[in-house]
Length: 151
Length: 416
Image 1 (spheres, one colour):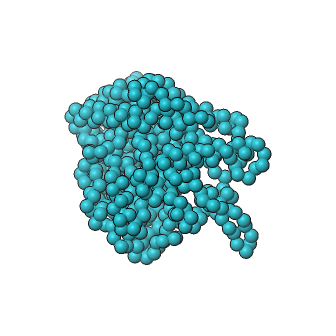
Image 2: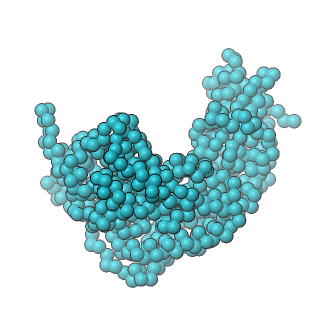
Image 3: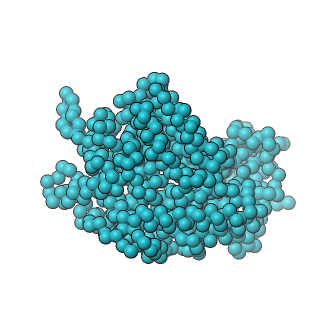
């Protein structure tokens, strides 16, 4: 199994490159959202809501053996697909790597240009929240200062 | 600019000829011809409005009211002529009853601030309905917080109609104002405002009507309605953005204190005290949106050239057709089925999230609104996160509704 953030991101870019029409890409994105285990009902509360998303988005993270495990969900399927991609890339990674992850693969899968500005803001809010979790759960060794890609 | 003579369109509505007047409609989005169904948010602008704005900026641009030079005189004349044009549109007593604001929202805020300071005290009540836009809720909430007054909400039924008896039951000695939407931007419901005003007046209660969604679609006569205040926006009726109208009966404009200070609202200023200009200028602080007002007058002339009767007939046909076609689709649920509706259809497709539907429709070149439409309390009333809203204007067609229906089938296939 490919295991760095960059390798996982590359695998996703390759997957999406197999579809040349936008409908296929959307179908694949929606499938991603459907197939990933997401958040338990108990965490679908205001406490775990990501602010800045027009659709409802819930996100939580916990530390497991020095790595970060994410759970997320959304009531809109396109949003849920995007979260699923983020979770696929960042789940189980070390906090330091998440805090400084380069997530530009989202620009390369050919989906971001189809997102409305409000949804882009929501996506940015989600990424910010995931990185904040990594910093908060990473202990004193993890800084939030950007250092370029770390994988 | 002279009012164009009424045309044959009043009897035979030539939608293709009208569409030719709107440059923005003739473009492709994601490779598809644009279908613009977000008219309740803002409408597209016809060529005469765009040309009028250009002519103003190219030849007449100047500040109003204080210049003795020719350009300033011309700009002042055009700006005041626009005020008179608006007054005629809604049958106000005269231009002195028309205050230009930045939009419907500012018009409501102006009344909430000025009327609030004049008349609202702790224990008083303001009555609104459950289908109000946030712009006709929040200014009153702020007023209540400032004064210790209380907001009372008249409920709506499952079809999206105001429950009239409950509205009546809310009116009483403590009621200081009724603020009611004429046409719901989310449901399309046309409220019985004439009766609501008459019944409030019988108890001596003044009434403000939010007419933002009414003026683009129907002839509004403020004197026939009898309302004390009527608010609307230029940009929803084919005019420029950034300009709104507050109509207020003359006695109110005389009594209300100024809203903002500075510029045109002043007669004389000294450090011992300031005297204020006559209404409506008393309420227009700073340099107004001169081009906006002139452009709005051009938009009103354009509407008049087609005629409200013809517009209403065409839009009613679109509404009936859209309702029929959408109802045929398995799983589509229309939110807002009042007996008397304007050309707005809010709906949900099965349990597909409105944002998902809207995103795919956009990809097919169809512009709809998704979300709560700034009526969150109404969404809570119906227990839904939001809707997909298609709102029509005089330039929309049955073919475009067919495109929407095809789009919904694509959405269902993708998310089903």
